[in-house]
Image (cartoon, rainbow, N blue to C red; front, side):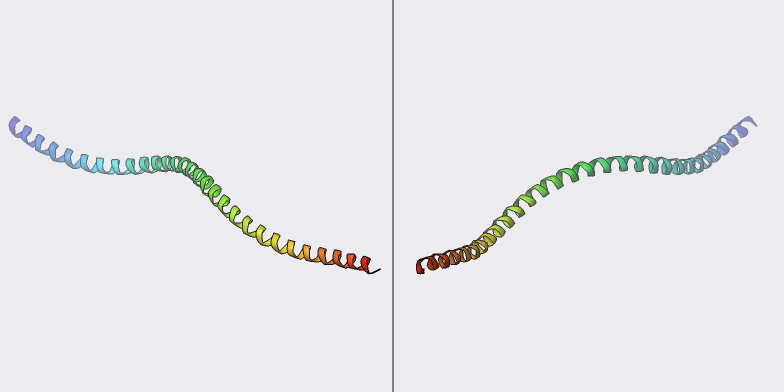
Length: 110
């Protein structure tokens, strides 16, 4: 009887414990891990991404903008100033010289 009970109990306990533990552990671990991982990952990712993105974007944007603006402004200003100054000076000098010439000629003719 004792051998029978021990065999029965060992088989029963092994089957029961294996089923119970597998179900319990699967449910517990799935719930625990999902909650833990969601909280941990959300916090970690938010902190990491905010720090990383702020540093990366600040460095990238500062370098990119400084290079882009320096090149763009130098090209734009050189072209704009050369065109503007050539047109402005030609018009201004032609008007100024024509007025001076007229004034000079009128003074001579008197």
